[in-house]
Image (cartoon, rainbow, N blue to C red; front, top):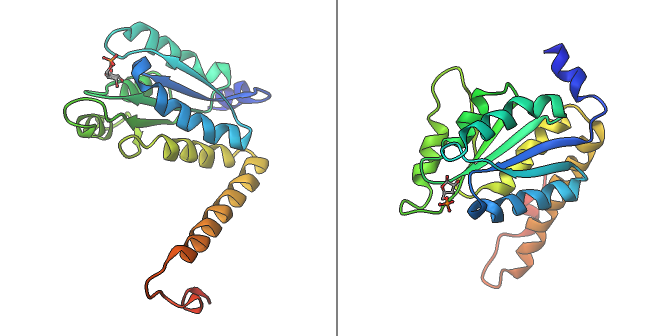
Length: 181
Ligand code: RP5
């Protein structure tokens, strides 16, 4: 484990987003927007667990030594990719079930969530690329005070947006002081 963190030190690349197919690219872009807003360096690749299994395994095996700290793996249908990536690295892997296909992503969600014991793979909701990125930011914030401060600010801004949205209510609404301490 010590060696793993030594490899990470000084590296600028922090997150790897790996897709099962180019058809998952829009989800990678959503995650990328979050990383860009936090100034976190990331990369995006395509390696199918079924069509290019060796590429997926090699990517996962090399990730830690390349400085990556968290991997986001996006896949639809039987969605083996997040689990396969997790099988080849000890880095945290966050799966994003993609909604394409006749079951609208329920198949992918169950596939990612139902990993056998010993190969933990996190899953966000269907098409939950934004939450996957924010979870990656939370993980990175444990190692980096600057990211942690930005995350606190992000959460404050999100709360302020919700409070501001109450102005839109034009039907009888909860008085503002009910929300206050
Ligand atoms: C999965 O199958 C991919 O992750 C994608 O979500 C889905 C369909 O892939 P394509 O047939 O569009 O390449 O492996």
